[in-house]
Figure 1 (spheres, rainbow, N blue to C red):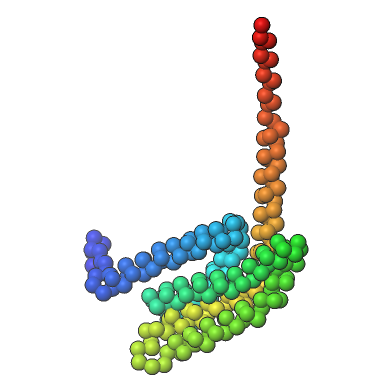
Figure 2 (figure 1 turned 30 degrees about the vertical axis):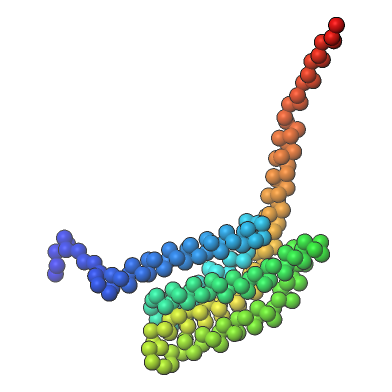
Length: 215
């Protein structure tokens, strides 16, 4: 046995691979942050982007579960597949949430009615986008051809993440939208009440003294 004072670390190709994985994790976090900021500017809200991004954890869990079931490692290709999932899942959520926001603002309907309309109207485009992405990445997941074994984690991550996220987010996203919209209205009412209280508590300015009459 080796003494406890001896330490080991990676070098060469293994060290470069480990550094690349750490960089991809930072890139993944930055990508989500930038998407949140862009969506916040687009919708002029800090709440609705959270609804759009709420499907990302389910997509990531589905990708990791698919890799675990197939016995594949979380390689660089798998990280690239997870980053691809961010764009695909976000696009599907935008199609639903954008329609609901427009219906709520233009038609003066409640958040519940707006998201129900969005889920029914946008169901077909969402499924078409998902099926197209699945058909495009399924050959990569099956791993046929020269050098396909190294690219299999990418296809498996995308296929597993899409299947799991679509089965969950079609039911979870409307619920999250309803609750977060109610939270936004509650915060707006509270902010308005605080502003009114501050105006009422502000002391009135005493009238200015009359100027002395000229001789």
